[in-house]
Length: 317
Image 1: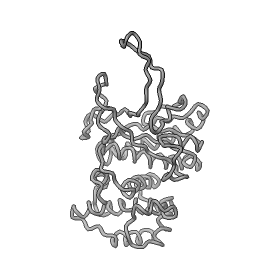
Image 2: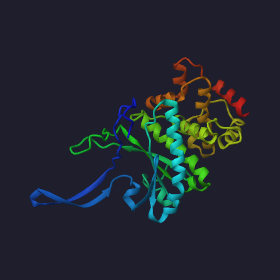
Image 3: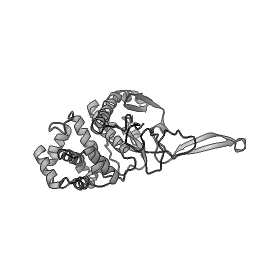
Image 4: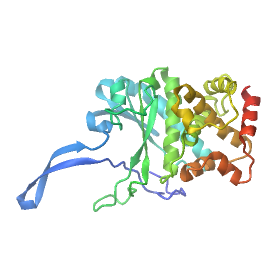
């Protein structure tokens, strides 16, 4: 539920994901009543469409999986609660409001299961084979008779927040690695919730924002200490930096993707060092689809590729 005292357009309302199904109804009594005899998911399938679920419900996180992976769910639940608490508390302290107070995550150590959730498993084109986790935006239900008035409705252009999935790669480096992944994905989810009708931002904006926050989490509030994961990555990336801002293509090329995430996150760190409110910036970039540097310079702050790359060299060169 979006907090009632939030400035969000859906303040006080709850998000309930709406998926498409083909329902077969056997009509009886000359049309006066009927019985549902078939229920078939359309497009992508959700985890709850495939098998019964086992879940751990905590204050800020719900972690679910299938019955034969109860141990995986139990093992991940504590990490999810820690990550969710950090994200909500950080947003609360930095912006005054956390518009998402509980996150839903599905976990599995089975690659085939991971690739069957919210994805057409017959066509994985464009999906990174070793992705650790993914945040999937959810649709809202259309307004209809009988629908609870407290549920946010809308058309296909408005989201209902996001649901996370974490797979084998996100779990293989232990609880610490899983917690980092969960922070990253939870930031995606709250970012999406803050902007329910975005214009479609670039990976530089969205992945950069999630990576920036993940780096703060890793550093205990300090951005990318040199000996932590993102700091080590940036030290390597700076050595081969060409002085240009990261681009969407950098995320497509597998050999460039690691640096693309880290360098995109550093754009927010550099902006913060210049006094920019990066929380406002991230939401505005998602809402408008405009590049970070354009939005920053529009507000009268000099933000150039030369200045950014020089700052990176000073910090990590």
